[in-house]
Image (cartoon, rainbow, N blue to C red; front, side, top):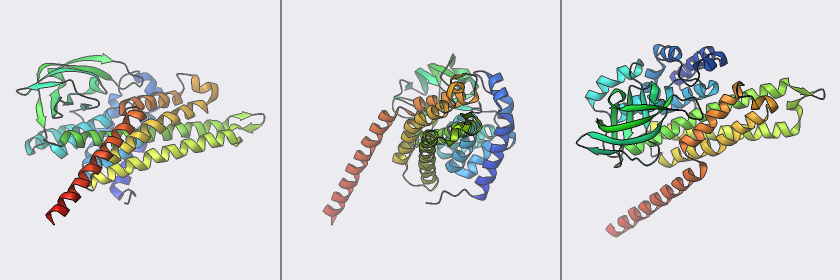
Length: 353
């Protein structure tokens, strides 16, 4: 395994870092409220960063999402790249790829995803009925990727459905999706749902790595600048140990997301690796954003302080990926299932011999 970014991935990451740093400032984020920043979204698309994911793969996207997470930039970048660009590239027909990919790349088509949790959506003759209570970035989306109760993927135009605003812990422009005989467009066949769920878990784990890194960077800056009894807070052993633990947690989120992404790009099995990344992102991410807020002392309790945004995003990603215990149970069940399948394959082979 080689997680060193390619020249193309490095260039895309550096460009994303510049754009997010320049435009996703605390002042602009505060002005956006619970909505997205349309000017930032236009800039990202015009710079070719959505289109670049088609060439840099899931690992390249994870690198870009780290940069988004560092600034908690309010744009549907992760959602549209995963549920739009990568989903259509991997599972769309030739006609769907020709029709949808250019529009996703230039930002005129924005895709949200409704894949987390068991689906209550039913399908009959290509029409969908049911309610998805929460879909992140739905208010920004022109399309939404929906899974039915048989784990099949459908693209739905949001204009053909009913969408109701929903406020989350993080300002993710979310909504409730209501389908009532809504026409859907089938995307992919058997295995497409599992692939896109694992892709989403990996991508959002990468986003969490950036959120945690940004929170910790702010805490380090604060504790180095803030003095108590004539010494910086950062000089105290308790602060150093807390920050060190947060750094190790952040690195664990990052490296497990990198591994899962690398395996998908290499065409290797990666479902268990995606769940591992999701577990670290949920369990460790929760700890890190609490640490970032705690090390700010009283300032961390100020809801208008920039570090509070990292806290909100970290907790929202924790909920979106599933709490640590739930993810760990699913991971254990998947490992056990794969072990049984491998044992059967070996037994069948010996029987044939």
